[in-house]
Length: 521
Image (cartoon, rainbow, N blue to C red):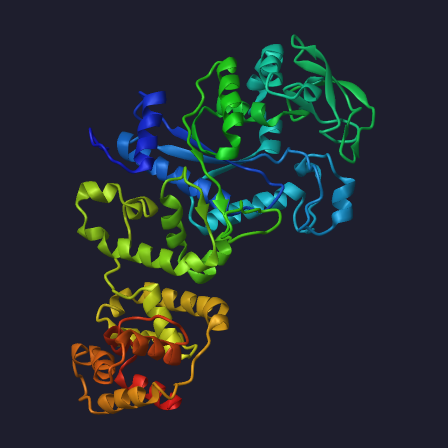
């Protein structure tokens, strides 16, 4: 437990905020955190980021207080299906079930018992793949199990007060018949076509009618008097959020910038129900390379899976750690720089003072126990090697890198992962855009002189003795060295820029470099 220490990183600031809002705590009291998931689609990068960020605050909070924590990953699987998703099979079946809770609709993939069971399972697989520590709960199970019974009765008793609060924020045409409760029609099973007609708080019941339309969804005109407990109703989004906070005693939850107004209203509803709302932090959205919001329904933008194909997932965590309230662009071309920034911070982490370590992204990503990385090999290093050698053999590249860096062997696992991911990135993004130049007549004598000088080099000559070769050759022929360097990279690597010549020689070796030049002359 930390005492009287001030840390600058945002997870520690959030942990202090939580402690100030809800403390003091009993010594062994478990503090509950929550993240929400809408199972109308597959988990996406926003889901990943919210769980990761919440866990960083959890770890910081435990560091400050010593209290145990628990993360509830909650799936609102009683939400109704509003429209047929474009990226799912069995569209006709889904169309026939529009308006019903996701937990009552068959699985379009025909693998699980329901639409939401399939999506919930994907969520759990998604979270498990990254080693997140969480407790899964779903709306359908929670309502039926009675988790919310006390809160539902309170909402019934305070129906008018909550209704007045919410309807003041709605357009005039949406205020009529609004209620915190969304009955599930006992006849047709739909939720968006129903409305509350009567209140019977002393009986714990409401009157309902299924006589509304929602887009192409039509009600069945059934009327009934039903209890509000046991899963016969759900509450609308803003009320449902407050109901979970109240029922579980949630102390912390993050939310996207687009839910700021919802969070404000849910906070007020939680207070109406008689409990203090959780501390929280709103975060900005993820954008694509054009600055447009990434869409999970259209499948637009870089995904967690695609990032992991080309780079370590820890580098993605490193990138999303910085200032959650700043929108972040995610696109494939940024991967090399992000990975190298991550590796640089990882390799220098042990050099930080203890107080500085607590504010490092690396501390939070690895919960204070990062792996050691003491190699100079970067994504760019491997990329230059792959470009130069032109092979697709991870073992070959690792052997090159062992000669380049004496520390490669003790970092073998991470470097081999870097090689494999770099090969995938090179095949998909670098190679298709490469164009190699032929040696021009102007440059041919310079390349020949460079080859002659390399032929004279003794084995094991220091790289420093070779570093100046292109510079000296260009100056000796009254040519700007930059022009010769650019030609070297265009001819040998198919790109305008590259590593320093000495680093390049050290990476590929004199013999490989000589072979590359001979093929071009």
